[in-house]
Length: 191
Ligand SMILES: CC(C)(COP(=O)(O)OP(=O)(O)OC[C@H]1O[C@@H](n2cnc3c(N)ncnc32)[C@H](O)[C@@H]1OP(=O)(O)O)[C@@H](O)C(=O)NCCC(=O)NCCS
Image 1 (cartoon, rainbow, N blue to C red):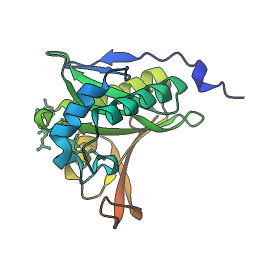
Image 2 (tube, rainbow, N blue to C red; image 1 turned 135 degrees about the vertical axis):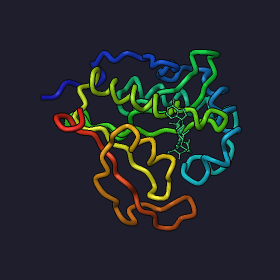
Image 3 (cartoon, rainbow, N blue to C red; image 1 turned 120 degrees about the vertical axis):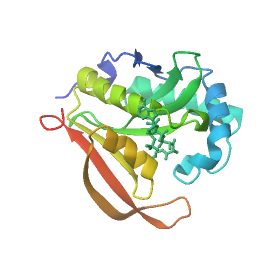
Image 4 (tube, rainbow, N blue to C red; image 1 turned 30 degrees about the vertical axis):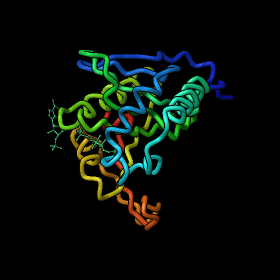
């Protein structure tokens, strides 16, 4: 029988060249709220949770739930901080986890003032390496709306393979059917 994932010892932080990448902690909500507030117009078309600006209390509650899920190993949110000044530059994480298969999906968003500098490409590469090295990943997935070119480019730049486009499998934020690009890396092929 598979061990209960709550028994896995998993580091709560690691670094890339320019970033500190870590599990959420109480009181991170303030910085997340600030980043979402600044970026709401860019997040709204793609992120169902970003249809309106959350209150500070909602952001803090969300962070505390995310911490709980991280500890339960059911979903692993990872916040991204610039090492240079400590600013929260965005959020990512390992989602849709299947511990038996060792499958993880990487999601992400950046605060608008931090786009166009390669931060997310750097973060996703580091998170994929973390999943491979620390979590024994066999499959790492990136999914995005087929119209989300910036998100697709992050996956492509890092050598994720486009496996296909699943047609009309979800609704977009307007409630209209949308198609989803599925990118992945698998052990023995891409790593
Ligand atoms: C998706 C998202 C994170 C991509 O942001 P991004 O800034 O384009 O991604 P990166 O931080 O990796 O930066 C890459 C860009 O910086 C440029 N860049 C500058 N310096 C770089 C460096 N050192 N390394 C790599 N790229 C660099 C690249 O050329 C690229 O620009 P381009 O796509 O115009 O060619 C951002 O658009 C976002 O948050 N969107 C809203 C939320 C969202 O859609 N999330 C994904 C849902 S599936």
